[in-house]
Image 1 (cartoon, rainbow, N blue to C red):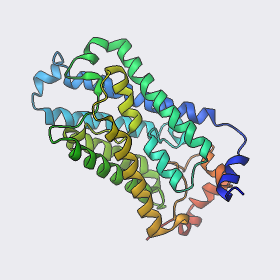
Image 2 (image 1 turned 30 degrees about the vertical axis):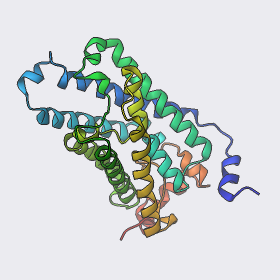
Image 3 (image 1 turned 90 degrees about the vertical axis):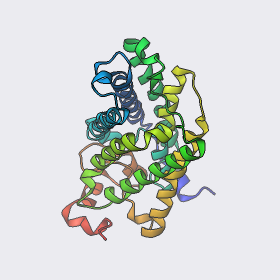
Image 4 (image 1 turned 180 degrees about the vertical axis):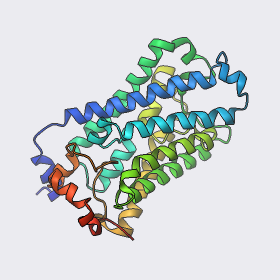
Length: 288
């Protein structure tokens, strides 16, 4: 006999191709932005390199640029519809919490990898020679001088922090609208501070998008294991502390009129979901 969750999965009839395409486009856009700003800030011929010779200053600018990109994507019309995961580790963490149908997990994760590869490809069409330069190297994520152990731990820690913040804010009435902003701020901070340790990926698909075109798979196992482990640990700790009912939805931004495939999976209508986030339903979210 299938479990209740498996039964709900089998009962889902519409394939959510629009959401899958959105997730691919979101990560593709993020990768395109990462490549363009990597060239702008690290290519030796860029005027920014001459103006700001200290790599830390340029990493801070890179963090600001990518954090702003993440925030823009999170609050875009597309991000509001798909939930703005654009990261297989995020999707797997919400799957662990029972918020995503199995077939949608496959659709999202597949879209993430396809979108990442496509995004770097598009960047290469325009800035191929500069993007391939050794100082840019297709924005590849690789362990820093401290080695693979430090890189693994660093990736796991920052992934745990990100998912903990996402769960904490998205399930609190007053903070929920700002979840996408908090996520973007963390991306900016991690790029500025953590990047020398692991390249700051937090995202297996993001690493593959760059590595595929650079033909560089240095310690790729780190980026396939540490981010999912960190986010799954965050999900496990959160649900053990607050209970499964404390996790409302798998969207980073739920307060919008877009359809929600996660509410469909949980047997809720979008209107009911909006009611849960209304002033009247504040007590249904974690408020402590």
